[in-house]
Length: 443
Ligand code: ADP
Ligand code: CA
Image (tube, rainbow, N blue to C red; front, side, top):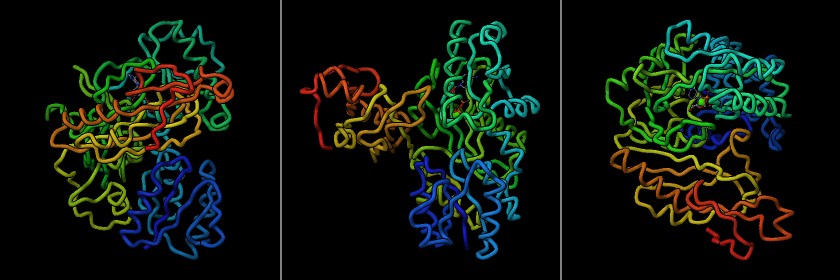
């Protein structure tokens, strides 16, 4: 059996998918948008595809499939879901309709589909960069949220409580959309404005099989997400919400998937819960991002990646049941912008009972960009325990033990000491220090 994996270079997940494919013994073709130095040596296993150009991608894959039949296509992360659906359709493989996947990737089109289906969603209105921000501000409901229609990971998502904040947010998003990595993409001139939905937030990880939604995990997000920016931190499962609320969340997610025309494969939905019920923030035709899937194990230890590959290849899935224990992840937020110098306290964080791994994904010297412009994390901390409260406490304690040394500006920092910052315990205890005081941990 041969499987085509579509991996954007920005993904954190190649390793986990390759490991799952190896365990299943499937022949893997890995396609990415940048040529690999190994490509010549393995022409049938490595492929360069322009994910932004589905016609070209289809030609290349159809060409390969003529020589080496492909049994399934698995897109990884947001950037490849669109091209994945187009390629699967061209190969005659079971997949979501391309129009539904495209709608799930555009926040305005998603709102239209959800509103038509009667899923609870806030009032919304689309503007373009050609619109006058002051006029737009006079028409907005407050509080509201402004966001690009085509980005992900909370990039460019900003709350505004009044017209002045609206205009500032509009201009800030416009600058992101005009940036070199975004400007050429269709929809990069659009800003969506939505009514702010108050409430607790959850994330639902699901699998669609013949249109039926299987809930793989429901995560609580215990840190309030009230803006002005919406940085993800804690995800803890199982949810502590009452069973009837969880059932309503699953119901709304299933209706939202149907409204978008999605019926196959992994989905990741975010919802906010208040007295009116569950409100759909968004629903994506992909699995959970970052390294967060490492919190999940099914049956006797199967990974989410293996479950997704088995589904795509129509292999039996021994269990769709998540393990009994509570689990969680903290996405380590960037406490301030600058260059990462060092992360201390990793061994101490790992020593907290229940902590399974501390994975720093940012590398020394990397430029760190905070939200709303940035979209990456410093890393991930994973925990498991008897109950969700214990997992949450362990993650908070582990985070408290980590110290991030971030250099504001390398040139200035070399000249004098004012460019160094240490952020202990995350975002709160940030203090400027002199170069001589910068702790060196080597952990
Ligand atoms: P992205 O695809 O970039 O993650 P989202 O639309 O999911 O963008 O928004 C990111 C986060 O911003 C959400 O998880 C939520 O916390 C917050 N958010 C977005 N829209 C709203 C809204 N209308 N009301 C309240 N919070 C919102
Ligand atoms: Ca989101």
